[in-house]
Structure formats: C-alpha cells, structure tokens
Length: 64
Image (cartoon, rainbow, N blue to C red; front, side, top):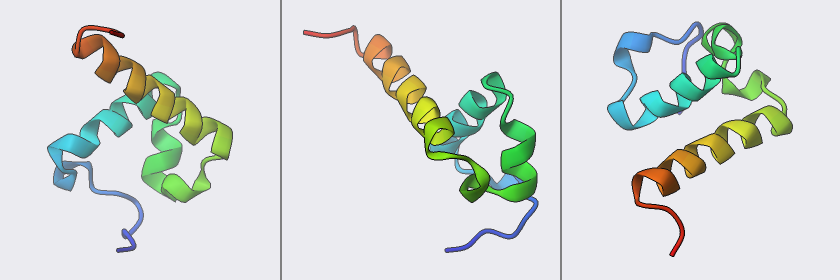
C-alpha cells in the first residue's frame, strides 16, 4: 500500500517505529517523513537494516 506523503508519525505501527528511530539517528528522518522511504539510497536503507539487526542481536543476547 502506498503511503501518502508526508508521513503521519502518529499512525505508525509500534513495530515500524524502530525504523524511524534508526533514520533519526542517521540524520535521514526528515527526508523519510517528507519524501518517503523510496527516496533513500540502497546504502542508506542497508545501514538502517543493519542497525536494526544489530540491536535485535544485542537484545537477544548476542551470537551463539
């Protein structure tokens, strides 16, 4: 489903909020809100995905 831009942050599902937090940490939040996720480069989205995976591993107790 295509989202209307700019994105309404109050309507973001809790499980999606982590992506926005990562975007904020990388300084990409404003771009995502105004232009959408499609405006990011593959490198930028990969960085966000890597950060999410890293946090998830850390939360689960690291590598086994």
